[in-house]
Image (tube, rainbow, N blue to C red; front, side, top):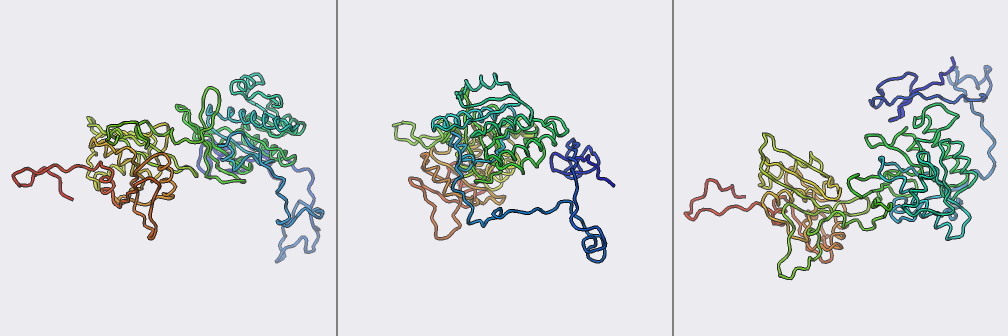
Length: 518
């Protein structure tokens, strides 16, 4: 019986079957099953005989499997010892952005295919068009005959030119093309052989040789396979723009991410100008790097030192110029911590507001902080820190779109809540780093020395950190006073935001309203 060329494929997990389902039986997602037409093979040649010999019978007399692909004669030199493979000719191409090069592992590798995905309006096309202008400008200054090709399937040539003028990316050797036909795109790449090819986007390019709508699983897979083939054949790097779904995942089949060499996620909040570029997959470099960019009316600008973006005035370690001799303090309800994002250590300012609740159920509002983590910290503060805020409305947030979801930010969140509840500010130039357990213990965090070094560079003079459990090593940072604590109660006292026990009456009799001594 001939095999049915029509298959049904799940765009989320890659499940395939001969019957359509409204819900994928593998991953359980709804509406992800799409029709896929397999290409018909030309002629099938069998290897081995079909008689009664060993070629037609397997072990035990049963019919063995027969392959439809014959082996071919391979010339000498195709397989080489790994020590004889020459990599000296591989020279990375700079994008003109040091942050972009950092994420890629040092630049664009010739012959590679990089997928840049992100939400609509986040700045993917602007970033790549400005990259195209930088590469074209570098090629022209080096007096190379190569050009840069930018293919847009979403905008016309005039629209791309207008955007290029706004971001100063107009160059003579930057070629613009507006087409949605895959054959035309491949012909342009083979004809011009550019130093860099950019295709915007994978979901808008279609092939006339396969069925399916634009952006479907069949079309996206064919577009990606064809671009990868031409990139490897003529050694031209390709930057491919990818759309995302409503849940933030890359649109199209998961095989798209497996086929390409590098997958970068362009993230950011539409309400802020900060943009983050992360490497989800990288065959030529690390995947724990992150690049910071600033979105403005003139285009994309890289931010080489993003530390100042996440701190407000009055909470950093710098001097405010006061000459009254007293140490300046931060506002009530604020505390600074340091979180890791790739190889970078970024300061995060946590702000908290504690008010009396007039609702039957007190309100909990969190921005940039996990709500479940906040509920746990409030319970631990009540039980082990003697900070009774269970009946209050709590509002906790970070500034500038920073994320304090790492466990190392627990101590700063607890300190901000205690500071807001007691009306006592954390001293300026003090940061708190540590994870809080349910028993009230302060647990160690990874790469603490790296965080302290960044804090010292920004001017912080005091840090409250977990006790170093590695004997023989002392935590230190230049110009900083490192205070090691073991419990939440000790940490709040070191930060100066612990609950103050009221004085007993002068009669000598203990007050019935005074809290139990610790």
